[in-house]
Length: 306
Ligand SMILES: Nc1ncnc2c1ncn2[C@@H]1O[C@H](COP(=O)(O)OP(=O)(O)O)[C@@H](O)[C@H]1O
Ligand SMILES: [Mg+2]
Image (tube, rainbow, N blue to C red):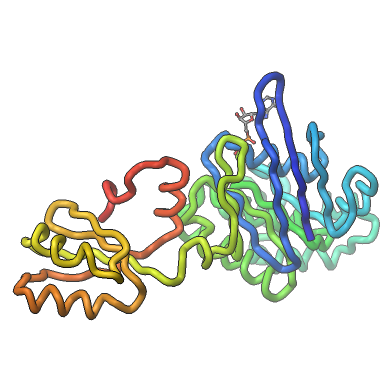
């Protein structure tokens, strides 16, 4: 669906993107993650042909955007940064205006896209009365109007409350699953999109430093546990050399251990047999956020552990 190869971009003497390579398949939800200023929006602008790369190639649906720009871009819908609307017009009127620009898009499609994003009930209300989440969904409706195969959403959760984020996530997952739409979603906050993406790439200072499936990046073979005990030092000495304990640290009255999956029972038994009183053992969600913070900050993630 999308292939970008070897993209470079500088503004003046600043290198903004360096050797970016990404791929998205049909129906796949791709998350492009990175801190503010790392080059996410610039990448989207290049893919959409809004700015030109210094080097590299973009293929959308098999079409090179340099050679077949029109064919490539008709497969695409996008919400880049905050979507703007005519506040004094209704949701329906705003989408109709865009539909009018597409000769082959019918009035029926306007109703359909409003239905898809859950705004049918509010289609006759002025956009001025919409919440931020509703405006974000109206933006997605507008991006859907020409039935694109690939949809770019640049920071779609920005500023939304948990309910608003939930609705956007549901919408993305449904469109990917039921309508085979592919998504390219950016975010600087991982937990916002962790649950919806099949694949992610992490960008930092213009370079992709990691990419792969969410499952692969999280590692399926190990788990993390917190062991709460007043005898942390003694427990540490007991377990640090066990072959299924890959890493263990003491933080105040607890140990944080990375172990092979399924070994927490065995570990518990050893501690109990050695008369270590354990308050509790808690699995720590081995979240992509930990992973991401580790990648992008280089800091000790356990310093901020719960
Ligand atoms: N038109 C431009 N001219 C000069 N610098 C730019 C321009 N657009 C973006 N930048 C710079 O490129 C870097 C990446 O920006 P951007 O792609 O917007 O990051 P992100 O979307 O990840 O927050 C930033 O340092 C930004 O200041
Ligand atoms: Mg941006």
